[in-house]
Image (tube, rainbow, N blue to C red):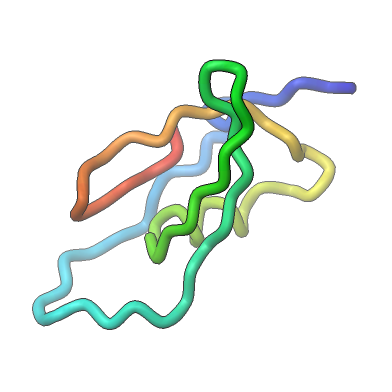
Length: 76
């Protein structure tokens, strides 16, 4: 099985600052592995969703780090 790393895809986050209260409607569900344990992450991050949609299907699974805070997350 090939191991891919997200940073090798050269996908940069798209984004802009929005004003107003957040309305969470759509979400991204990810299965991750952290410290050897499998976990599931649910997020409404538009940046993560936009980035993951750009990854070619044949490049899954891949390794990455998710960075950010409660305002914005991104794959690096």
